[in-house]
Image (cartoon, rainbow, N blue to C red; front, side):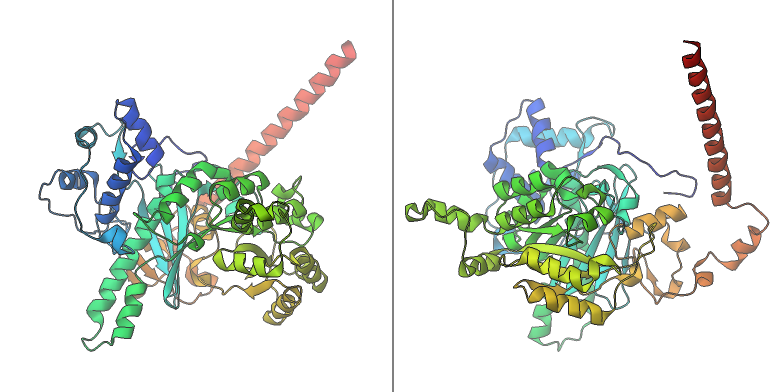
Length: 544
């Protein structure tokens, strides 16, 4: 997005469509008279995953047994990673990565893909392996967090965050462009909703993050000395794989239910990403009906409820979408999700027909080890973080064996001036909630120096209307092509554009000032028209 482009408020139809959107691909095949069995679909996507998601023409040549020279990962002039770049990455296990005997695919499928490669760019049935690109990515000063700005093909930008813990990597993905929930403390909530991501666009975030991890791992292996011990090599090998996925990025996942469900199924598919079921977490502000749907469709994954307040009145103040959805119903839906598998086993046992809702502590502990039902609770200075609020939250969780994550507030540019309580206060809050039997922890703050909060980077960039990393407040010494190492935050004066451009623009009216004047004039005109219309309406009624 350049300085003279306006922020888009809606999504354009996808063209080309993501090949990773299995439903869209199946629909296009059937429209051309091609019907694939589930077995052929599984084999096709397994081959694509093993190949590292190369450009479609390369993949088609590979399927035909032709020898092709694989593309090399490259960066565009603007610092973004090219869509056509191909960097292979290590897959998780022998099932998804072993060479083995290659399964035969129908000739009709190969012909469709070959024709698709040569099809016009604006064709309704055009597909591409990867339709998005990494516009930029920033790594925090301590190296634990990398934030990706992923540009979709229609120009919208969503965020993904890679978090490196001891021996594992977690990826936070987005499911929508913007969000309709309007939480007062969330940067994404200020954007409004602009559209859903397809299942393919959600999965492409995993591909981009995996390639970044692979490149980092390869660089680390090249720089290490030959005498590196096996323990360190094994740790480095683990760090080039994504182990956990959390839907805690931009958007409300359960408002994009069909695509999120399809993406989750691909993530836990042993032929593809092969993530453990309890390593995928879907977070929701509280769409009760969809919470019950995901318990029915995917009872084995984790579910997190973004509660943020201990009672209904407090919650409605900071989560506007909470109106009409009682907290008690959300807690019941969350509890039902945690106990779904246990309940299913009991119902299969004829001796336990009478037992449907009451579970003892041992059964709850056993269920929580297999998957987690979590409450996310942002810590804000005010009513929601008082000692009384801690007791209310503890009583909500009492006897349920739920997990409560206290999230220190990461300051964002929202209307209300919010702040995070002190560490001592949060520890006392945690102790009180834990006294009611819940497992309560304070989440470690990561990525604060790279705008790590949900939607923060995109919102900041849209306000500047400039997304080129060369124009950012980062010294050139710390910038690599496509990767930025964050530096400690400086004063506002050093965060502006270089002094030469400041001097040139000192005598000119800034674009934001002109826009403000235009908006003021437009508002005044609209108000005048409203007054005139109201007066005419009153006169018309009097004449009658």
